[in-house]
Image (tube, rainbow, N blue to C red; front, top):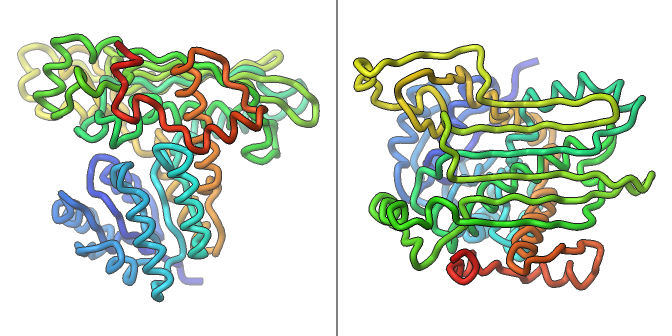
Length: 415
């Protein structure tokens, strides 16, 4: 039987979209047929063609591209998501034959936006994939498979801890809380919350089997609120943290309940844009009765040493590691970051699902659940209290809640 191919169209041509291109180089059955972007579309298309990923064309609108592809991957800034998906839904209603639509995390800047995206996709009859790469990481999947006999015999994990930390985003809009939705909690807390919930879930149960009970969180502006760093941020990214700051550190705890046994388990998350070691670090671990696991992305079988005399030859430190902070000394090198971080596997999952006419493993409704937990964490930090997710009034409040930081009023909370 001939291999089937899914044709992608990207909305957005920035860092994240290019990371996906690097992942697609490792997969069969996906062709990058188009791209729409405010900036960088021609460069992105040339890169895709140069890598043999397809005859990528630059289109002037999302609606026009939707006529020529089978799947649209939304990798555009968070504040543009609703308009983009509205255009996709309109194109489908006008006859575009899309098999599915992908949205990079987070699904929305708040619950209302995330719910709107779900309604648009379902109203157009679209299959969906919520791209949360860390759940697809091979180390996470392999440890669960390795520990499955123990999990069944001894019981599931009782504590999960997940951290994602680096020195800060690449692009100016990521730093702007009104466009991005907040600071590091919105940007990366969604990763850590999702993977914590995932690894705690008992074998064979649905993704949302464990019921969220309560959330507590604390936020801080520990580095990028200092005058010298604010000045650097304003000069290099065009964002003024004296006026509209966002958090660069977030930590918290979510308690879940097993509806069958009543057991309560906990997922801790920690995220920062002030990590001063080699570069991006993903650190996850879990504790069960008599067993445990740990994942640390800075532990690599490959290291490189660059002395002072040779350091000037390194023009792009990120060739070694995403968001690397140094180009000399002993450097940790990940030889295949897209695969390590789960990008290849989430794209393979979307390909198989859409070609088979079904939703991906992580749907937009799942993305809505993660957005709700992220907003609950913001609410906890803002009001300095434990947020009870079993309270119907709390759930109603979260539907319309917009954090002060997202409103551009972060100085009231962070300073």
